[in-house]
Amino acid sequence: MKGSDQTHLLDLCRYALSTRPGHTVKVDTHDLDTPGFSTVLALGASIICNKIPGLAPRQRLICQSRPDALIVIGQGAQMGISECQFQFRHGRWNCSALGERTVFGRELKVGSKESAFRYAILSAGVAHAITSACTRGNLSACSCDRDKQGFHGHASGWRWGGCSADIHYGLGFSKVFMDAREIKHSARALMNLHNNEVGRKVLERSMRLECKCHGVSGSCTTRTCWMTLPQFRELGYILKDKYTNAVHVEPVKATRHKRPTFLKIKKSYSYRKPMDTDLVYIEKSPNYCEADPVSGSVGTQGRVCNKTLMHHHNGCDLMCCGRGYNTHQYSRVWQCNCKFFWCCYVKCNTCSERTEVYTCK
Image (cartoon, one colour):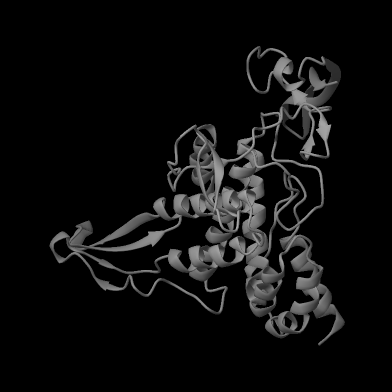
């Protein structure tokens, strides 16, 4: 195999697994079909998978056995991180954390509501990306949902057709891969597993039925229908709402081994479990005002805020935690109101604008 091919593969993996804030992953699907790509993946999978930071031992085995899914997993993780950053862009916590950079981004060290959201959105992102790749034919082990073919609902006059997204394959892959991170029997592991499942359930319940009419002169004598994935932004809004209503839980330990066996709602004399669609957390959130290596908080120093909003998350009072803010003045000059005169020149006015930006001290 040529060195250029191996470099190309490493570049693809590096970009697909990048987790820099604001970085968007763009991988041309034609790259997956280039001659020798599968061979390079197979030969280099062991080396690449062992060098990816943040993978659990079982995840490395999955990575090595399914190298064609490696890039898709990275895309799904980045999609989840980007959506997390969008949903919390106006808050003190903006989906950032201190610590080791991994394929799943830098993670908070406390079992807070923010961690709950992050695990759910990442799990949904991997499931969404895998399902989408199956539908496009970019993965060798899956394609369209074969169960949704042929007639269905004769009375309503429609049948399965097209390429329905195989959501069950995507959910199953996400469960095997994402849940493999939890290798300890702890309350945090139970919390993470629960929130992983919430993310997948939200995706499954957001699937849409799309149909196309067939008939003479535009009539709808019969309809062909297929299942499609929702827009990922839709999942972000649903999970953000669940974040707002997240449930505080605590572990119940088995008397024999004294290991946490399940989570219950944190109330005295109650053993009621949270609903399987609730985001759960075991620790209260820090205020995220100051950088703190223990919790993983990066603080709000240098964050842009809005001084005109008094009681808003993005307002300088709340964002800066009472420390005050710095004012930065900028001037911009550009050509405007341009007109073309015959023949042949253009005459423009000069426009200017002064703006102020406020950042937390």
